[in-house]
Amino acid sequence: SENAPPQLPTRVLDVGPPNGSQEPRLYVSNGTCASYVALSHCWGKHQILTTGTDNIQEHCKTISFSSLSKTFQDAVTATQKLKLRYLWIDSLCIIQDDADDWRRESVKMGRIYQDAAITIAATGAKDGTVGCFIPRPAPPTQAALPYRVNEVTIPGEYICITLFPNREVTSLESLRAAPLGGRAWITQEWMLSRRTIHYTPARMIWTCRTVLECEDGGSEARMDEQMLLVSVKRYKDNKGKPPRELGPSGWEDMVGFFADWCELVSTYTSRDLTYESDKPAAIIGLAREIEQGIGEVYSAG
Image (cartoon, rainbow, N blue to C red; front, side, top):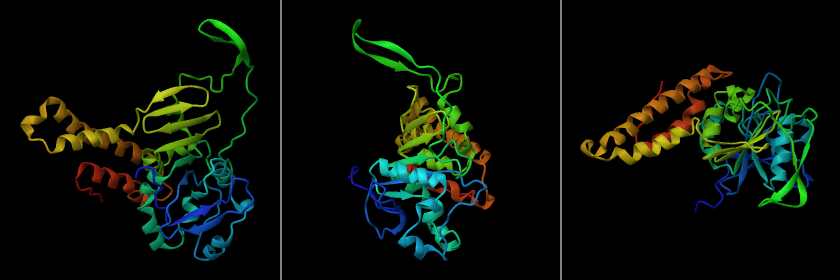
């Protein structure tokens, strides 16, 4: 069932109950099914806590909240506020000094983000010291407006405030220009996530497969790389038809998919990777999803 909870990733953080009465710990799922949150973040140049062969047993017992970076602490807090118990963070849920474990788990990342109930994106943070809940400057003057329904003023008022005055920059452009928006890994993280909360210095931004909504009331249709997923469906719908039945629009859909894929690859390869050797792994989850969607074979290298 689409509403049934998915199988958890191999390892997740158990963040405990919403009241924060329990320290987080690494939980080996062994196929358990439950809803979970995934974190999208920049590692940055500051050292963050990781799981390795030397501390995995200790992490399975407990991970001190104070040992986590601010981004990880905020992600734990957000997960608890969402009343969810499990959180997936790459640096803690993959054994970083075990090449075999990294190889196994890295190819699952696309599915991990796709199956997550929600993705928390520390979009405005260049590293773990910044966090999700970024302090904001004092807001501008508030304006109180009468509350009217059908031209009739009734008790109460609107409190209006401008959170992000530069409306010449679209929300999508602001996400791409943010520190996290330049990472190659986010290509599949953001495309495959069913819903995402972006934390930026100015505002929170909600995205799903169809719409982008801002904390300050702005709204945009999803007209970014997500359109590739629409192209996949159109390609699949036309693939089995004889050439004479395709018609101009069918041929356009078939060709359009490859144009959209090439544009995505161009965008992906322009983004940053700490390790160039990660280039195949950082998009393999998305490529496999598209491969299954169109019934073709993905080849790279």
